[in-house]
Image 1 (cartoon, rainbow, N blue to C red):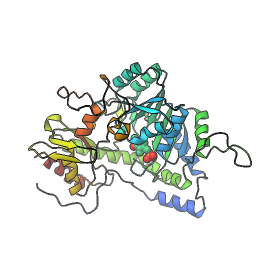
Image 2 (cartoon, protein in one colour):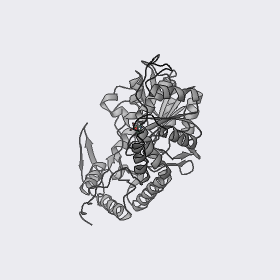
Image 3 (cartoon, rainbow, N blue to C red):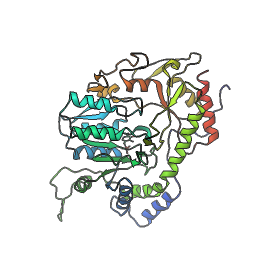
Length: 412
Ligand SMILES: *Cc1c(COP(=O)(O)O)cnc(C)c1O
């Protein structure tokens, strides 16, 4: 097959897909001068999305990260409190714990879903029985085993925060992700399944909690003729313009999911003879939103690859490949792939935090290859062998076929 000609337009991992209504809405906001965080639109999308996600009260905020921060505050996390968090996730899942002075305790990942391992979580409660808050992320749009995780939280009387930033529209046993936790969040960042260019939302069944977040997000103004303040406030309210964009995008959510599913299915079919698997999920329980298609190289087909904190090197061997080699080939083709999100316990900022695996208290940077095929540190193993593939809605079948040929060539 040889070297492919690079694409003229870059094929992104996941970029915004606009439909036209968004622009009309933005223009309407401009023409009517609703250019602020005051306006009807945040309220409108709160009602629609809150209803769709299990009849919850929703609060529209400036970012998903702001929503997680508010959830962590609602959960009552204080200076020195430890909080159980997904380990293989984006840093925004866990940073807000630290904003409140808390300390994330990372829970290892399981191979079935690439999400928080319920067995490791139960272990963690045995080791730290006093912990009262759990933050779980549904990475890449594939649900975690959320009912098992919720049952463990209930047993230990812990508050569950669901980070559904990447999984809007995904369901678990027929129920939407972002509706299982005490406090749930979604994101409208530019690379998510739908976008407002930025923005996020907190969702909860607790009306008092939702009202608190609304007040905190508009600087905690009290009802008085002057600026009256009795508690700490934040500037976290979603702008009316962003809400208009979200309003234009939201009706296209299921169309985007169908496009992403078609992309995933084509990769799955195209790679069926390669020594790889796609990011897995339980067919019986989960309906992902397929936000990103990812692949994992079988251990026996992994070439040699070394990474330090900033760079990666690999050795090309016949019939083997590495994420490094494949990502370099994708870059040559003018397309964007990415390594699996680097687990938090391997991040320099968090490497002193506790890390709990199926075997118990783990160690940062545990060697990924212990016991053939059974790594002690699942997150490190997935990071080592996995990568995210170009998953943009606007990628054509022809472009995807070229991408797949390029990946296959890496194994020659
Ligand atoms: C994007 C993302 C967030 C943060 O959302 P922002 O709107 O970008 O602040 C949080 N968690 C996960 C898993 C994400 O992917």
